[in-house]
Length: 227
Image 1 (spheres, rainbow, N blue to C red):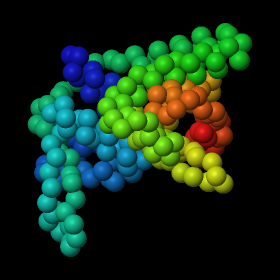
Image 2 (image 1 turned 90 degrees about the vertical axis):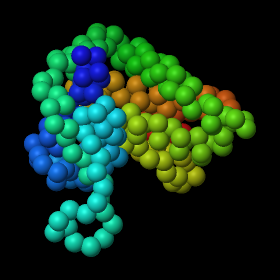
Image 3 (image 1 turned 180 degrees about the vertical axis):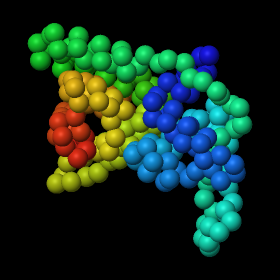
Image 4 (image 1 turned 135 degrees about the horizontal axis):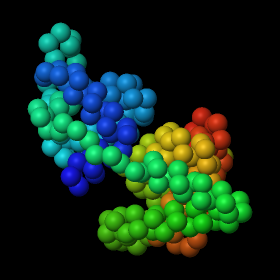
């Protein structure tokens, strides 16, 4: 039950599994097809597909499909027969909604500060897993550290990438794993800003100024965190 909950607790991952399973046979589904079906960035789709494959719910196949034409064979994901028949109820969305409402009972400044600090604590814990390779020869440069942070955020469903513009380093998130809850309670956006700050505080020297420049929850095209 615990394994199934871990695999299918995320609603996007459930939708992806059902899409692949319903295709049936050996045809399977490519990452790009899955991304287009559920409306996420291909990096996010690949993350969920690989999690399902690691749990034994999908098989990874390579090779050309009949009638697929010339070109490099695509990696396809095929549902394992009878791997799972039902899903347990997951309370993540309910808990996030409850958190959002609880934060609205605080002053805006206190709520944002608390949300960012929770994110920073989690970010520092995430960075602990990177320290072995990132800090073996001392702290990395700020640019390479930001790239490592973007990669870590992508693995957590943010579909992030780093960029440099006007002598400023930024992390762009094309997807928000908090979904509609962040739209209803934008203060939750402070969590991912805190995650960036927390990770960078462990991967670089000193405390950096981290700000939010744009947000999906506020109606922007993507989330931008500037350093």
